[in-house]
Length: 257
Length: 304
Picture 1: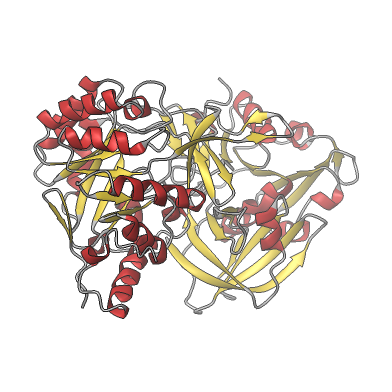
Picture 2: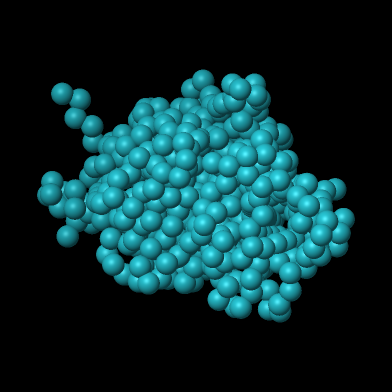
């Protein structure tokens, strides 16, 4: 773990609520190895209402450019301030934090299911799978077409299926209603997104005997196991989602009990 | 070079900067960010006789310049600490001090006895001020009689430096401070968190599973400074001051109000290296003001 200042290289507005920030260390030191599912804690300065850092998934790591990509959704004052940063401005990051998704050792059928801004860590996971010669399927959900983010980037890594609640893109409905789940037998599902979606995905995986990992977004203060605020109830008792997660195998969780 | 050494009971600290229990894990969580040997001491997570799972999620709510927590003393119990955690932390080049909590006086005493046997455990901090447990905790720290009683019994069982951590959720904190001083406490640390509450107005639900929780961070600092100042004028034992300290300026303010040493708490979450930066800041302040020892500053307010 390190604390470092990063410069904003670019800030691209993806829709009315989401921004893609590409950031690079100010000191130009090469980025350390980072794993898909890990996250950063962004310090937000000059706001009395924003006291704690904001935990944000690592969306992608471009080692050639020495860049981390961060997908930011405007949900409150903290993420508003981060979204408003301009190229050349800096932000302070605590990183990399947390565990990672398990990259399969053997080939098989892998499905990465994300909802809304929860698709963020799945891009880097897909990239790491591609490096191992795996071409996963992606199932991305959103309220409408504009909420399904980075479709073009995902299409470079595998086959992309979509659902939208209004039917403006892909099949109408929720991710768990998509027809691909009836047509194709998957060996492993990875998911990140709103909790009700992840619970539905976990339930589908469990009923069909499919291994499944979910990335949690519990509220947290520190991000490195000191405050004990972000706990998740597991079969081993309460554990910190920031250090023992954010990725959990659904067999460890108590969601479906 | 200004002198940074201070004394708390029988404990000599290389400098007055320590980290507050519950915000610093067991120290090991912070070794990526600093050399713990640069600190005066580290107060590790609140420890109880039996393991505790703590309270349900959600346990945290951000508030203006602060946060509420209701962790509820999640820890694996004193035996696990002695067998598994103490061996990992005992050789850090600083004082590692356990914060002891309990539901009954017997629990406190049994826990203190086990810790008294550890060679490299020079002190304990008696937590009679946790607002997040149903039994014990703050209940002991809000009446003079119970604060005195638990201090008296633990004093008998623990011969080394005994620090009692006081609750600010009382009418007059000086009465409690005097009560524990009279029973043989070597020092008091103050303040623990303030009982607070926050609501989500859309769902109308409390933001914490326990409804109320402990407020910490810079938002409590002026109240904590006031309480340190009051206690400084009420007792003779040293005070370890805390409450929203985020930088060396805050630390000096607490020292001027009457703290012999200070603890950095919630700000460790935002900048994990806050405490070592404060050590450096205090030293340069002393040099700039030509003060030979930090002890000369304690309680030295100029009232005009």
